[in-house]
Length: 236
Image (cartoon, helix red, strand yellow):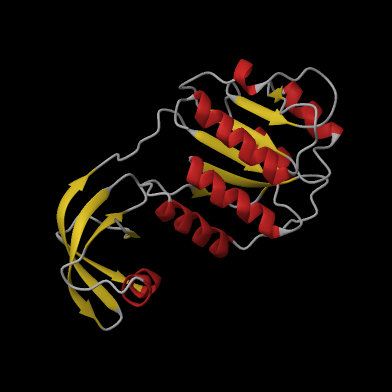
Protein backbone atom coordinates (compact mmCIF):
# COMPACT_ATOMS: atom_id res chain seq x y z
CA UNK A 1 0.00 0.00 0.00
CA UNK A 2 1.28 3.49 -0.85
CA UNK A 3 2.53 5.62 2.06
CA UNK A 4 2.20 9.40 2.25
CA UNK A 5 3.35 12.00 4.77
CA UNK A 6 1.07 14.33 6.69
CA UNK A 7 2.22 16.24 9.78
CA UNK A 8 -1.18 16.04 11.51
CA UNK A 9 -3.23 12.84 11.70
CA UNK A 10 -5.38 13.89 14.66
CA UNK A 11 -8.45 14.74 12.56
CA UNK A 12 -10.82 12.42 10.71
CA UNK A 13 -10.18 14.34 7.50
CA UNK A 14 -6.73 14.98 6.05
CA UNK A 15 -5.71 17.01 2.99
CA UNK A 16 -2.48 16.25 1.15
CA UNK A 17 -0.90 19.22 -0.58
CA UNK A 18 2.23 20.08 -2.50
CA UNK A 19 4.57 17.26 -3.52
CA UNK A 20 2.53 14.62 -1.67
CA UNK A 21 -0.59 15.57 -3.62
CA UNK A 22 1.24 15.67 -6.95
CA UNK A 23 2.80 12.26 -6.37
CA UNK A 24 -0.57 10.81 -5.40
CA UNK A 25 -2.53 12.07 -8.40
CA UNK A 26 -0.03 12.67 -11.21
CA UNK A 27 2.54 9.92 -10.62
CA UNK A 28 0.51 7.13 -9.04
CA UNK A 29 -2.79 8.30 -10.59
CA UNK A 30 -4.79 7.40 -7.51
CA UNK A 31 -8.43 8.47 -7.36
CA UNK A 32 -11.46 8.62 -5.09
CA UNK A 33 -12.08 5.32 -3.36
CA UNK A 34 -8.44 4.28 -3.34
CA UNK A 35 -6.95 3.50 0.07
CA UNK A 36 -3.50 4.65 1.20
CA UNK A 37 -1.50 4.77 4.40
CA UNK A 38 -0.49 8.05 6.02
CA UNK A 39 2.27 8.71 8.56
CA UNK A 40 3.18 11.78 10.59
CA UNK A 41 6.85 10.76 10.89
CA UNK A 42 6.49 10.45 14.67
CA UNK A 43 5.24 6.86 14.81
CA UNK A 44 1.65 7.64 13.90
CA UNK A 45 0.06 5.73 11.04
CA UNK A 46 -3.44 5.99 9.57
CA UNK A 47 -5.28 3.88 7.02
CA UNK A 48 -7.16 6.40 4.86
CA UNK A 49 -9.42 6.56 1.83
CA UNK A 50 -9.31 9.22 -0.85
CA UNK A 51 -12.67 11.01 -0.92
CA UNK A 52 -12.04 13.88 -3.31
CA UNK A 53 -9.41 15.20 -5.72
CA UNK A 54 -9.16 18.94 -5.21
CA UNK A 55 -7.39 21.60 -7.20
CA UNK A 56 -3.91 21.39 -5.71
CA UNK A 57 -4.80 18.84 -3.06
CA UNK A 58 -6.21 15.44 -2.15
CA UNK A 59 -8.86 14.98 0.54
CA UNK A 60 -8.82 11.75 2.56
CA UNK A 61 -10.91 10.27 5.35
CA UNK A 62 -9.10 8.41 8.13
CA UNK A 63 -10.45 4.88 8.64
CA UNK A 64 -8.18 3.73 11.48
CA UNK A 65 -5.10 4.90 13.40
CA UNK A 66 -2.21 3.42 15.33
CA UNK A 67 0.61 5.00 17.32
CA UNK A 68 4.19 3.88 17.82
CA UNK A 69 4.26 1.84 14.62
CA UNK A 70 7.67 0.20 14.20
CA UNK A 71 9.07 1.83 17.36
CA UNK A 72 12.69 0.80 17.79
CA UNK A 73 14.05 -0.77 21.01
CA UNK A 74 17.08 1.53 21.05
CA UNK A 75 18.05 4.96 19.77
CA UNK A 76 20.73 5.39 17.10
CA UNK A 77 22.34 8.79 16.64
CA UNK A 78 25.08 9.06 14.02
CA UNK A 79 27.42 12.03 13.73
CA UNK A 80 29.00 11.88 10.27
CA UNK A 81 31.22 14.34 8.43
CA UNK A 82 29.62 15.46 5.12
CA UNK A 83 31.65 14.20 2.17
CA UNK A 84 33.28 16.42 -0.45
CA UNK A 85 30.98 14.81 -3.03
CA UNK A 86 27.61 15.48 -1.39
CA UNK A 87 26.01 12.61 -3.35
CA UNK A 88 27.90 10.18 -1.11
CA UNK A 89 26.58 11.77 2.06
CA UNK A 90 23.07 11.74 0.60
CA UNK A 91 23.53 8.04 -0.19
CA UNK A 92 24.34 7.43 3.47
CA UNK A 93 21.23 9.33 4.59
CA UNK A 94 19.00 7.30 2.27
CA UNK A 95 20.39 3.89 3.21
CA UNK A 96 20.58 4.65 6.94
CA UNK A 97 16.93 5.71 6.94
CA UNK A 98 15.94 2.51 5.15
CA UNK A 99 17.93 0.38 7.63
CA UNK A 100 16.82 2.33 10.71
CA UNK A 101 18.24 5.47 12.33
CA UNK A 102 16.82 8.09 14.69
CA UNK A 103 19.08 11.12 14.50
CA UNK A 104 21.86 12.46 12.27
CA UNK A 105 24.28 15.29 12.95
CA UNK A 106 26.65 16.47 10.20
CA UNK A 107 29.93 17.19 12.00
CA UNK A 108 32.58 19.55 10.70
CA UNK A 109 36.06 18.21 11.46
CA UNK A 110 39.58 19.59 11.13
CA UNK A 111 40.09 17.71 7.84
CA UNK A 112 36.57 18.23 6.46
CA UNK A 113 36.55 19.24 2.80
CA UNK A 114 32.84 20.13 2.93
CA UNK A 115 31.61 22.55 5.55
CA UNK A 116 28.23 23.57 4.12
CA UNK A 117 25.16 21.42 3.41
CA UNK A 118 21.67 22.24 2.14
CA UNK A 119 19.28 20.97 4.81
CA UNK A 120 16.15 21.26 2.67
CA UNK A 121 17.47 18.81 0.10
CA UNK A 122 18.70 16.43 2.80
CA UNK A 123 15.30 16.54 4.54
CA UNK A 124 13.62 15.56 1.26
CA UNK A 125 15.94 12.56 0.94
CA UNK A 126 15.12 11.43 4.48
CA UNK A 127 11.39 11.82 3.87
CA UNK A 128 11.53 9.90 0.60
CA UNK A 129 13.55 7.08 2.17
CA UNK A 130 11.16 6.86 5.12
CA UNK A 131 8.18 6.45 2.80
CA UNK A 132 9.99 4.04 0.49
CA UNK A 133 10.86 1.77 3.40
CA UNK A 134 7.32 2.07 4.88
CA UNK A 135 8.62 3.44 8.18
CA UNK A 136 6.62 5.74 10.46
CA UNK A 137 9.52 7.61 12.07
CA UNK A 138 11.33 10.39 10.21
CA UNK A 139 14.97 10.69 11.35
CA UNK A 140 15.90 14.00 12.94
CA UNK A 141 18.50 15.97 10.98
CA UNK A 142 20.48 18.44 13.08
CA UNK A 143 22.35 21.50 11.88
CA UNK A 144 26.03 21.04 11.01
CA UNK A 145 28.14 21.35 14.15
CA UNK A 146 31.87 21.65 14.80
CA UNK A 147 33.39 18.41 16.07
CA UNK A 148 34.65 19.68 19.42
CA UNK A 149 31.46 21.63 20.13
CA UNK A 150 29.42 18.52 19.38
CA UNK A 151 31.54 16.19 21.52
CA UNK A 152 31.53 18.51 24.52
CA UNK A 153 27.77 18.96 24.29
CA UNK A 154 26.70 15.32 24.08
CA UNK A 155 26.80 14.56 27.81
CA UNK A 156 26.85 10.84 28.68
CA UNK A 157 29.34 8.93 26.50
CA UNK A 158 28.66 5.39 27.74
CA UNK A 159 27.20 4.37 24.38
CA UNK A 160 29.42 6.60 22.21
CA UNK A 161 31.95 5.19 19.74
CA UNK A 162 34.32 6.66 17.16
CA UNK A 163 35.38 4.88 13.97
CA UNK A 164 38.81 5.98 12.78
CA UNK A 165 41.85 4.64 10.93
CA UNK A 166 44.43 5.66 13.51
CA UNK A 167 46.32 3.52 15.96
CA UNK A 168 45.43 2.29 19.42
CA UNK A 169 42.97 -0.28 20.71
CA UNK A 170 39.86 -0.72 18.59
CA UNK A 171 37.29 -3.48 19.09
CA UNK A 172 34.61 -4.86 16.79
CA UNK A 173 31.01 -3.61 17.11
CA UNK A 174 29.92 -7.11 18.11
CA UNK A 175 32.13 -6.83 21.21
CA UNK A 176 31.14 -3.27 22.10
CA UNK A 177 27.49 -2.62 21.24
CA UNK A 178 24.98 -3.75 23.85
CA UNK A 179 21.55 -4.82 22.66
CA UNK A 180 18.94 -2.26 23.70
CA UNK A 181 21.53 0.42 24.58
CA UNK A 182 21.31 3.82 22.88
CA UNK A 183 24.24 4.48 20.55
CA UNK A 184 26.13 7.51 19.32
CA UNK A 185 28.46 6.64 16.42
CA UNK A 186 31.01 9.05 14.97
CA UNK A 187 32.44 8.78 11.45
CA UNK A 188 34.97 11.28 10.11
CA UNK A 189 35.72 12.92 6.75
CA UNK A 190 37.73 11.54 3.82
CA UNK A 191 41.01 12.42 5.54
CA UNK A 192 39.87 10.77 8.81
CA UNK A 193 39.70 12.41 12.21
CA UNK A 194 42.78 14.33 13.29
CA UNK A 195 44.99 13.00 16.07
CA UNK A 196 43.73 15.82 18.30
CA UNK A 197 40.10 14.83 17.68
CA UNK A 198 40.85 11.17 18.39
CA UNK A 199 42.70 12.12 21.60
CA UNK A 200 39.79 14.31 22.70
CA UNK A 201 37.40 11.40 22.27
CA UNK A 202 39.71 9.13 24.24
CA UNK A 203 39.91 11.67 27.07
CA UNK A 204 36.11 11.92 27.19
CA UNK A 205 35.58 8.17 27.35
CA UNK A 206 34.43 7.67 23.76
CA UNK A 207 35.70 4.26 22.71
CA UNK A 208 37.16 3.37 19.31
CA UNK A 209 35.40 0.83 17.10
CA UNK A 210 36.91 -1.14 14.21
CA UNK A 211 35.36 -2.18 10.91
CA UNK A 212 38.26 -4.41 9.93
CA UNK A 213 41.69 -3.99 8.43
CA UNK A 214 40.59 -2.36 5.17
CA UNK A 215 39.96 1.35 4.73
CA UNK A 216 36.36 2.31 3.95
CA UNK A 217 34.96 5.50 2.51
CA UNK A 218 33.08 7.76 4.91
CA UNK A 219 29.63 6.81 3.65
CA UNK A 220 30.52 3.09 3.48
CA UNK A 221 31.76 3.06 7.07
CA UNK A 222 28.67 4.95 8.25
CA UNK A 223 26.26 2.59 6.49
CA UNK A 224 28.18 -0.46 7.76
CA UNK A 225 27.96 0.79 11.35
CA UNK A 226 24.26 1.53 10.97
CA UNK A 227 23.66 -2.02 9.72
CA UNK A 228 25.81 -3.50 12.50
CA UNK A 229 23.88 -1.61 15.18
CA UNK A 230 20.51 -2.70 13.82
CA UNK A 231 21.63 -6.28 13.31
CA UNK A 232 22.90 -6.57 16.88
CA UNK A 233 19.48 -5.34 18.01
CA UNK A 234 17.71 -7.95 15.87
CA UNK A 235 16.18 -5.42 13.46
CA UNK A 236 17.97 -6.50 10.29
